[in-house]
Image (cartoon, rainbow, N blue to C red; front, side, top):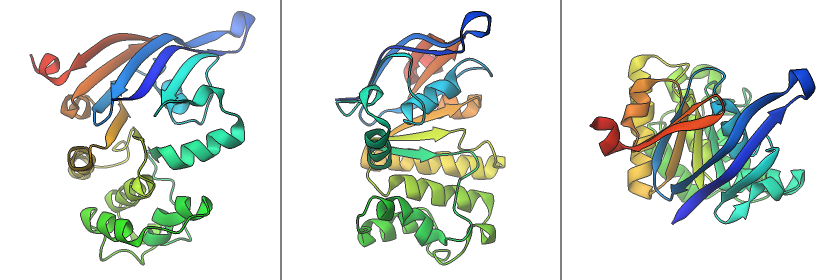
Length: 230
């Protein structure tokens, strides 16, 4: 089943002499349960694509269908609600609230949505993320790897349609980077969680089932793991 459908996506910044075509008629589909890496050099358009997929920016034209909803047609309020419920965002710098502990950071999106946190899911995520001894700790009492684990847990608390990670290991050492990717793979395999990673790290890209390369605002390569390994 297609969980994400991108059709003729364009993003233009500025006009006249300052006009920049950040994305040029980008189209691709992602199936539920895929583990996909989107790669490209600085200025390629991958960050713009990530912002549009995450619902934090809007396209100039084209469609972004997530679970059958074209989010490019939603108004700001409806888009914010959809993003909170259907898109799990993981950032390079964690974006945790400094005055909230691990449990509070993980459940904040649920509370903001006016819902009661699923304690069973929370406890399960805390255990799988290796945070059982840290639930009462504040972000500044955690290592970088632990903070990113909290970020992953927060992103998964709403059972999102897609888990979107923007350079999730960019602020971590190699050991923690491997652990974070292993955790994302674990949730992908065990729960059929669709994972999309935006990265410039070739090692991370090669661990994905599929690699989409973007350059100058256009997709230049789209290959499955067996093709990548060949």
